[in-house]
Length: 305
Image (cartoon, rainbow, N blue to C red; front, top):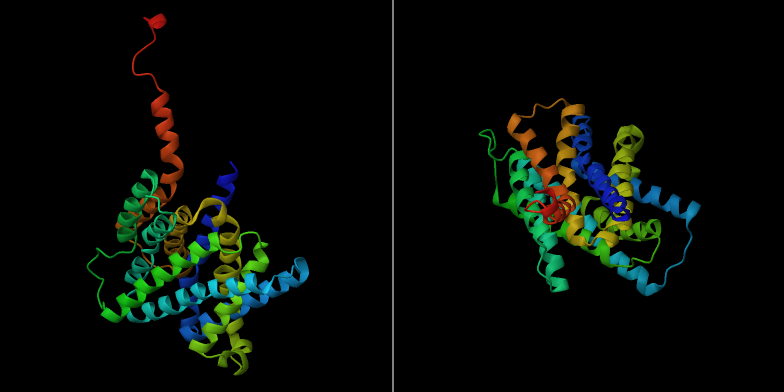
């Protein structure tokens, strides 16, 4: 039951992250660039985490521990950078399909480090997730086009970096309070984002001109909630299962686009969403089903004859 609580946290963190593409689309319609929106996401997220630490947890970390978290935070920024460039180069449906390769990459990464073959439940779940992601991403629909090699490379790099982010969330400084851990990781991520995308939005008037309306929800849903929830849940579940639960981002992204942007989603994509949710639930439900099946007698007892 306790593991279910941690699984729910990772699931909710992934759903929170899944709403980002919709908010970014709204911001771009309002005249802001992708670089400004992603930069404001990390800036506002970092500010909210800093306030949380000052108010609730002032635990001091040693230099070695703090440095390891700063290095781990690089994976967060790389995911945002690579995925941002992938979205610019590719149709959104293709970009998100490429990003979602982090599910099997994360499971394989865990298997390599632990020198242990993935469980049957995880292998079945990865296969179901792959099928569901292809369907939900609309990659089989005839309208998909405009694929470039550059975009595919950036999309796959975002998947690798996100898999590493989930992995380090469950392995680095697990004894540190989640809010402190999240602040350190986000600090290095913010520095790299500002180096790549420019910090000009902070002082050129973009924030009071309306960027704050998008930066605040992006920071909350894209940094504070997922980084905190992943920091709490993934160490308890393992990075492999954490990657599988992280696939909730895709259904959340599609549902958000329908409810907020009023985008049309085909029946095939809805089927894909259901398949993805089934793949997420597989590691939890399959062992229960196997146990029930194994305890069910094949033949009636003698007394019943």
